[in-house]
Length: 454
Image (cartoon, rainbow, N blue to C red; front, top):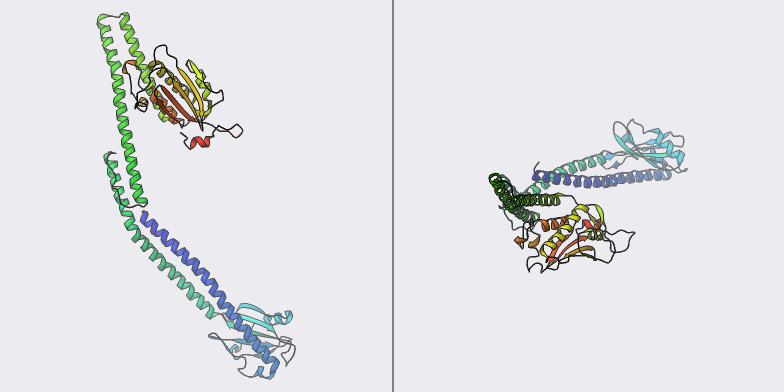
């Protein structure tokens, strides 16, 4: 079912439900009002008969004295004495007799009461009331007044039919109104669908969906989808650059390795040639390990083990570790975090002066744990702090390395909910702290980590 059809059905059903509920409420109120009016009329007629029995008992038996209309129907009246014998009756009864138990119950209880009974193939409303114990042969007896409920039932039936037709008419009107309103709202979605299908057919994320000038959900959807396409295009470009860079990095040692193997085949082995072969093989192995580590970091799940960052810093191959001695607990993948710290230390030794000292400092910064590795070199130049963590970026190509060490550090920090950055010769990893209710302030919980503290 299309969105338009579902909306039309939803509007129709909601309208029908609203009208039915309203009709039911009106039906209850109108029916109650009509039945109350009928009961009031029957009670008033019974009072008139009781007054006639007390003031002029001789008139009770006069032909037609007990006949009167109730709505569009003639009322039916019977007067009985205290022994439940009929003293007088209205002409509208003809040869029929009202149920005897009603009068007997009124005489016995001394109070009036209403009943709805089947009488002569129709529903009638009956009111039986006791008569005063004075004034003629009906003294101490009862008067029974009855009237057919056909007028009330007909009115309620008409109301029911009106409610049904009103519900159907309102449902149709609501569905048509929604269809008309949805037509303009769905046109941009149709265009978006066609454009998205074309992008899916061509596989070209550089194409964009048609923008609309609307400021509603449809307009925001088009903007969001185009932003997503921009992100996909950037990710594809980054992937292509990564493949090109990886191919270039692999080509250099492979070319050297092939040349050395060819020389070996022609001239035999020499110590220098064997050393070159070993160096090329180690470079290829290191590059493959770094590529695998980077791929695992980008695809690995969020870590869930508690690790003390201070302990990892003390276990690293640094010349000096500084900190206040307090534990800095983070949710971490211990091997991955150890590798990231080792990469920072290795980077510091490679780019620092020969024999220079490499220092690690761990500290708490509000809700974060920070680990900083510093060497005694000149460090990065201005503007190189962000580039240093790009894949295959080298500030000094002559220093060797795969160009992936700092990229692995950044991927590891981001997977842990933190970040990695550089300032001169200072390279820092910041990670969210864990906070436990039973410990002192300064520790942050998994909730805070899920919020992406950085």
